[in-house]
Length: 106
Image 1 (cartoon, rainbow, N blue to C red):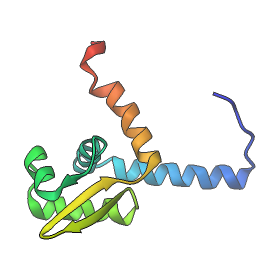
Image 2 (tube, rainbow, N blue to C red):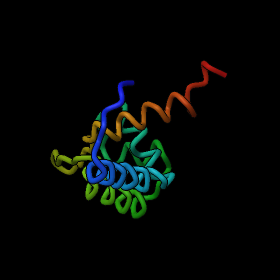
Image 3 (cartoon, rainbow, N blue to C red):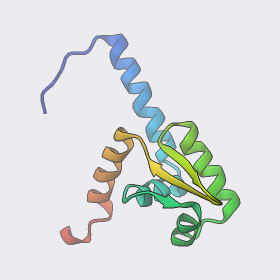
């Protein structure tokens, strides 16, 4: 990893962005949602079924993720599909998966 010199203002901005992402990821429901979406686009009903998160909670957490621009949504008929839309969030999810979910290394 090559070190790039940042001025103090740039460092503060980058630290703020990183902290904001980590704060969103600190919620277990949001973390599990992003983990599922890192595999590809899913319908709300599929997310609910796979994770066992009840609809009101799921809607609330998806709203937070959408407001933070980590996911995007599209409607097709009665279905709403979500997908992970943040490259930074995907990169963090890949690291978290390799550290906590990859059973091959145990």
